Amino acid sequence: MLTHTQILDRFAARVMPEGSDDTARLQFAAAARAISVAREGVARLDQSCDQLVYLSSGSTKLVAHATHDREQVIGFHFAGDLLCIPARAHHSYSLVALRDTELVATCYDKVLELFGAHPGVLEILLESTRASLDRCREKAIALGRKTAPERVASFLIAMATRTGRTEEGAMVLSLPMSRRDIADSIGITIETVSRQLTILREQGVIETVGRSEIRILDMQRLTEGAGFLPGRA
Amino acid sequence: MLTHTQILDRFAARVMPEGSDDTARLQFAAAARAISVAREGVARLDQSCDQLVYLSSGSTKLVAHATHDREQVIGFHFAGDLLCIPARAHHSYSLVALRDTELVATCYDKVLELFGAHPGVLEILLESTRASLDRCREKAIALGRKTAPERVASFLIAMATRTGRTEEGAMVLSLPMSRRDIADSIGITIETVSRQLTILREQGVIETVGRSEIRILDMQRLTEGAGFLPGRA
DNA sequence: CGGCTTGTTGACGGGGATCAAGAATTGTGG
DNA sequence: CCACAATTCTTGATCCCCGTCAACAAGCCG
Image 1 (cartoon, rainbow over the protein chains, first blue to last red):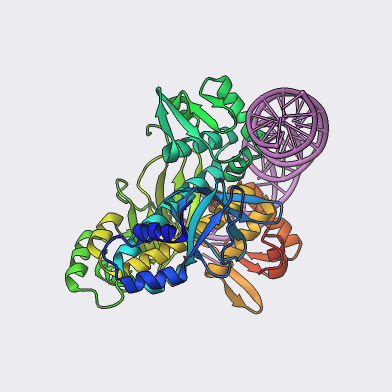
Image 2 (cartoon, helix red, strand yellow):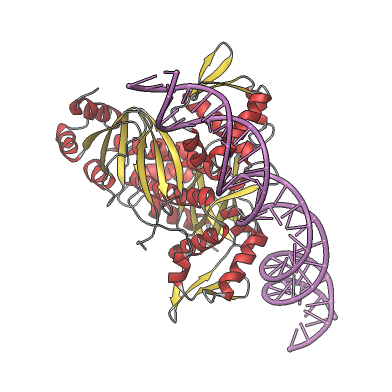
């Protein structure tokens, strides 16, 4: 468990890389809030303005609420990520911890006000926003035009890219999220997720160990079923 | 029809607002390409690196290709917009003109290289990227969790927000895109779009004039059917 | 071991896709 | 300015994937 000061320092190291002046740093420390969120907990953020969040440890899902009973997981985020949580508008967004998580949150506008003249900070914000946009667009393709089997395959590949590790020739995933989270992320039901995983298991493409570990045995076959463009990895 | 120089000047005015030095401007002019695209035409962009595009006139759709017969429209863009077209990877993206369009394109990396030290330029890029991300997230909600009627209503409201004009108490949209484009954008078929518009017409919520004009007569009813959070506009 | 949550499997039905035909709009040439 | 072809849109009939509901199994924790 880190102290608030340590969390803020990590954030400072991430966002303010080079010699940004101490005045701005101190002002930032005054404006930013360090927050700890327990597993399954919802980060209590200011919904009145867009929030910039830095995850110093743990992992989260960004959830959008349409009508009360329908949730769409917009994305998963891991330690070190910077992300933006939009203010409440047509839909409301919330950040939910998948594991115990520590984060730093500020009003996006406040950051721009303090660091609008610092190219280094802006470049980092731009880079992380572009990464989020890229992933969101890939998600939009999956949600709009892919079948259930393709969605599951795409999801597994995306997770392998972001958090997978190679072990004895197999790509191993320790998924921090539940079947429900996966389902809400790719726009299908938990039952359908389960059925698709069963099919992949029967085909020998994956193995599952307990609830959270998935071992990808045949990445090529998985990729073929992901609905990607032919002729490319 | 603008000359290439005029198009570049417009772009410069949009991206380089204050006194950015002439050296960078000239270097940029050398790196940027001004392109005219006729209606229905595909902008011939460099697919090997992310492209930054400025639309000086016209309107476009950003299309992602999954397998050959399936297209997902990621977003629509209008004159004055800045957008990023990702390099080819798991999917390939292309920019298609809905009307005759003029644009300026450059490698995103080149822009960062030239203007990485200019806070004004970075701020504009960040702002437009955040706007794209916001819209993409709203789209993800619609694609993942909304029914066909809700998707059509959400689409009409989004278009009203971006390009609508008020006339005799009605919100009037001149949609530059076809039913097919709408369908590919909200992840349903043209037939379903057509059916939903018919239902809205029968309910007196909208009127259609020709193929491209839609008049929203009852914005409240439309909003109620869009699957937004209750109790908010 | 026994409750409790989470995941899996089965049966069934519905919303939207697909296939097919007809109507409306737009464009073109006389 | 009016045929008329070509495209786009609308409407109808049928089908199927995946959502829903329900029951059961498997992890997980005291």
